[in-house]
Image (cartoon, rainbow, N blue to C red; front, top):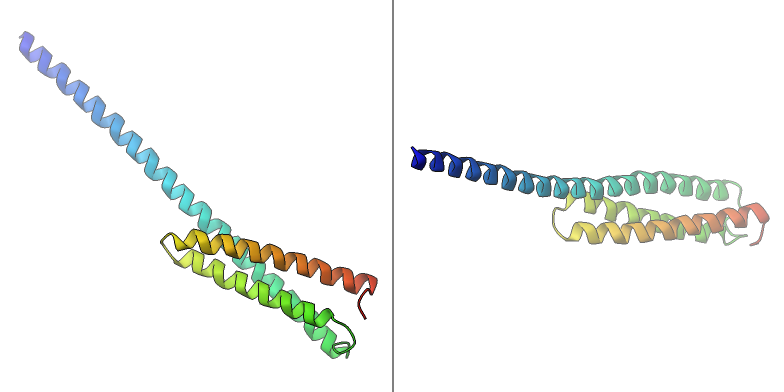
Length: 135
């Protein structure tokens, strides 16, 4: 009888241990999946925003060409640089979302940096247009 009770207690302890270890493993798996979702979420935001800003740069460039201001200012050259930056950022963020390995995070970081540089160049272009600095 004592032996049976001891076996029952041992089974309860082992089942509690198994339950705790499975909960710990599941929590780590959930953290990993949340981290992966965060990375993909950031990449998707970079992709949508950079593609929208790419469209705005095309509108600025087209407007300069229609108004025949392309040869008179350096704004169209700066706009072309911003277009290249936003295009590279879009491609890298897309590659970050598509790849499943360690390159994904690297692509995302590079896309983020290039996106910020493109934003800064778009800001400079806006200041040039607003204050007629470059002619």
